[in-house]
Image (cartoon, rainbow, N blue to C red; front, top):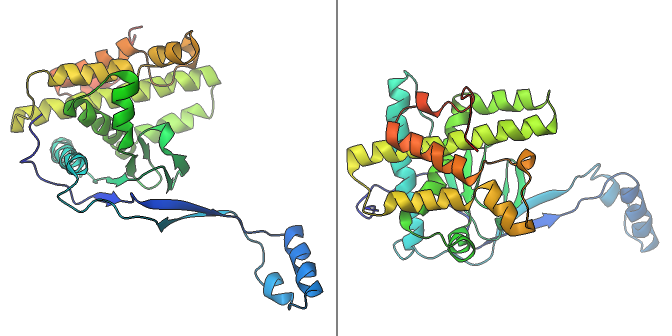
Length: 286
């Protein structure tokens, strides 16, 4: 993938080298007990009682710094890909008569606190609609290579473009509609809605690649195959088979390998939002 001469995004927040401090503040009966203990040791109990009802908190505090700018090729790459998605989606929203609101991409290591709650790196990259930020621990790419035998810079770009696709769904009101409908149906149907939402994000990732290639010629030989391999490797069926030795389709939340490849292909071949309407598709392919 040709990326080194690309524009860098201003929307990258680097929290690597920070650790998540999880403190517990006590209220109610716990506060009274602490006050009695304070009295026993001759401490003014009002110092504790005046704090009132307190709740669990999390915060991020500095640990060790991230690599200096210019010495971190993978972070540079992520910034360029994010900038490229910004350019594509600004144009797509302009054509629809709207304005694209750029998301922030947060780099973290180990664990992170977002508006959607505390998250560990093991859950993989994710998008939080609460703060409109994409979160990624760059170690995920090593896991993608070692566990799933998926490598290549365009495969890595696909991951970012997929999460940005969820941001697009938030801006278009799709995510909210899914959330509202999910509160009224069974868990099986919730899973099916989730699959359609994830496959649409795959299609949006393909749509980004289509327009980025048309305007900036970013693709090199083998790039599309890299992205297709990534989509296939993280299909629910393959992950379930690897993890427990059998597959339960009703529990799928992201789609099968074939489905994920199919919808990425639709996006990259058409470059059309209309072709990414997974919610109206009669069949998603099995």
